[in-house]
Image (cartoon, rainbow, N blue to C red; front, side, top):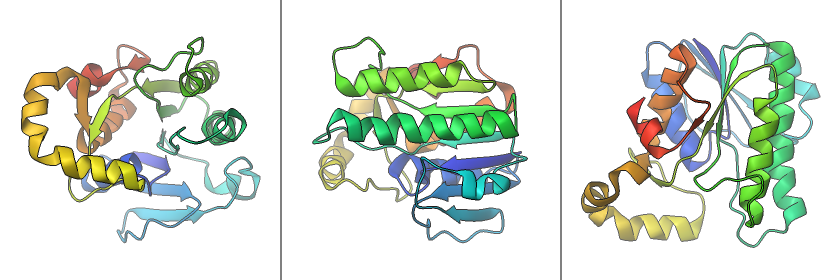
Length: 216
């Protein structure tokens, strides 16, 4: 299986990249992002591209892949809707359209979030919901991952300072939290493994919450 990962330098993307490099079913990994991952592996090739809203300069290198794992995203905290929409909707939909044209029917897994709702009151939920709907309408086998709390494993960390501090505080209590709220929580490892499973076998539903992600 040949996969593309967008956003492999973020917390979720790094976890997904790790699982892809470890899994023998994945033979080739291409990362696409604004910065390099710093990871060296025989299976890995990287595309560093500055404008994720315009993939035309790198389109020829995106053809021939079985699946795309789209992990690129930002927190909406402190952002206005125009800027948040540009990163969340424009980047994602651009990638979806390109891959639907280059590899119609291929798998596209989008990391959305619990609470996503195109008609919701929260700005981030509306934008993510509109992004999901756009992807689901394309000539792709698109799956929406809606994780809740994501616990980073294997040295993976968040690039957001506030989130890093939060994970440091909650790490000692993770086993307890897992017992109390298991179905609402997942890990970077589980998300990566679930994406590979969906790429290989599909899933019974197109929109998958934390419990469904953990069950894959």
